[in-house]
Image (cartoon, rainbow, N blue to C red; front, side, top):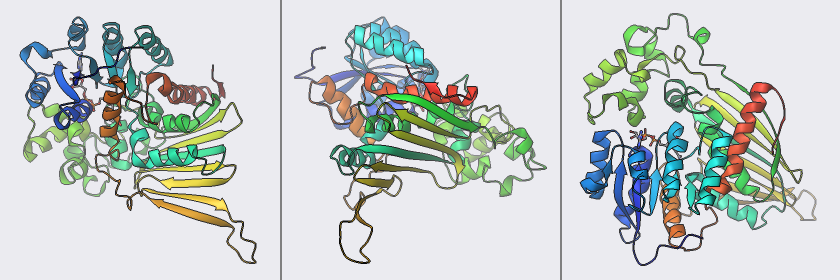
Length: 434
Ligand SMILES: NC(=O)c1ccc[n+]([C@@H]2O[C@H](COP(=O)([O-])OP(=O)(O)OC[C@H]3O[C@@H](n4cnc5c(N)ncnc54)[C@H](O)[C@@H]3O)[C@@H](O)[C@H]2O)c1
């Protein structure tokens, strides 16, 4: 076992100074006694310099790429690897070989072979690698896990989870954006729902998944579905823009949604004017394209069925382009059932009623409203981001891990289900897991 880091803060290197890394690295600003940021590696000078200013990183700790850092073992205890999905494997391998512990963003890698290789490398080099499955740290799922492991509904028999991706999130990420093409990123299920499949595997802890089936398709965002008269770009040639829910102006300017994706093409200008934004949407900004005329190829809805070795089953539905984004869960156990809505922050546990009176209720209900418990935090993952990095640091310091700890070896099953689901969907067969 690697030696715990005691009597000093854990030192970390940011690899990929993008949006996600900074969220985790900020832990150092609030807890300088526990973690300090000493290195940044990013080819984008503006981001690298901004991170260096934010954390006081000297010039000797600034690199243009992960491979420069990989040639300098020992510069930090650990790295926060927030590179984009297709760089996870290429960057993690040399950094692990160089001896860095790692907090790695999800998904681990786009293929099962690469995931297995990374698990083997972490084991061989005795490094701690944690995956950013932040949902495990969100109060909603932490409570679900606590209830289920505490036996609230007996033995688990069947689980159903659902992630509904809003219309504007679908468009920005999976139609116009960086996760819209499998070859550039991943299949949609892996990109968007590896969290949910990880939650299923986590709740079924210890029981191997054995078979997977899946159906899904890219049904909506295809050229043949463009409304009559639709143009190529919302603000260049589309008369339907004022009434379209996917309008780039509506979402990225009027509602100011997704600014870190929508205005990336204008960086390093971090405060573009509205006129500059409008001009980019009219001309070369990929987020100005008509959603029916992009080069996307990932699905817009997919359903997965998993069978576990003990006979339990789980289903997950990914529904894209809905009005209200949501995550829900329904679990049936031998002694009751649990149902919850992550957005509402409400969990209901129902058990058969033993009341022996005519007209007695068929079941009793215990309602847990996380909002009443004061646990809802607005960082997008219910405070999970901060708890995750805190757990990573605590793990490196040799303190006992939380129930959520997302070591790479524990994160494998959810990814394996995602890979199998895509094979099952494309090859129209049931996939047996090895
Ligand atoms: N856990 C979650 O809920 C969650 C949510 C969103 C995104 N993500 C994942 O987080 C990861 C990062 O997403 P993001 O939105 O922060 O991306 P980003 O594009 O903002 O950041 C990636 C950074 O990596 C840098 N980079 C590119 N090549 C590099 C190299 N050779 N060496 C070092 N850095 C390099 C880029 O310049 C960029 O600054 C992705 O894998 C994404 O899928 C996770």
